[in-house]
Image (cartoon, rainbow, N blue to C red):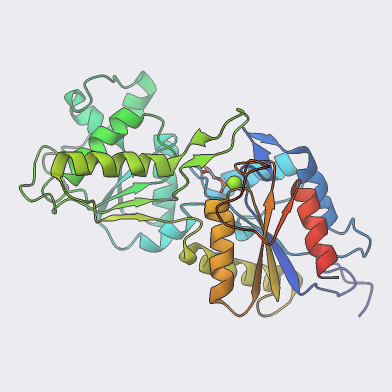
Length: 347
Ligand code: G3P
Ligand code: MG
């Protein structure tokens, strides 16, 4: 092969492996970049003994912004260009559900940002909890919308609107009020605010963008995540109805659908940027959460022909010294070690 190629592939050599990175607890913590992360990116981009450039993607359960906006942030944090074409967040696969429902409630994060994300995915009619509070302040007795929230919320008459599904896109910022509205809808007749079903099986389905009960920030102990909200909602539903909630679904890792989605993204990235057809032989998945990253990678490995190799780092949810609930192929200190381990193994 020639030396004059200006594409991403160095000297025409494209490795038969790739990396997939979790973000929180691997590359970032509490919004700050983990020191070894920038070096790991450089290493993958040619600053390694063989001068190889290695394809990689990002697979985070986080969310709350458009993929474009999140990738701009990441590019600055990691000092390397990150394209939405190599990025999947918790709610990315939800774009494939946009056609299924007419009116949806989108919960979490900055309400307006999540509305923009959902509309960008093609959801036709996106309602936020703020819209419902604006309709009747009495829905949430202990919360008054701020001036900005009131201004951004839309004027609708929810006594005449059925909400067909609930999508939790990002961590709730107001658990109490969001829970109140979610419960109102789950117990309603056909998603109509102010109605109460006799059978409690007429409410809309609820989708969570992931199921992480905890995640790692810069506080010394793990913090409650979206999976905790699901536990909370399910317990309340049981308490109110005596029944088990049957209509909750979670996306994100460790769900197999997310790994299939990641495979498609990685294949396309490898083809468009590196000119290589087909999937790589090995995908090194670097994560910090045994229940989502390691479990998902291990289960997916059993499911496909290619090798999916789980690498657990010590910089996030996993507490060094404990036995992880799902065994990774290897445990390393940090993301730079993870990259070196994978590249050395495949050398
Ligand atoms: O809220 C985000 C967190 O639960 C997980 O993010 O990047 O570790 O998958 P990540
Ligand atoms: Mg993580």
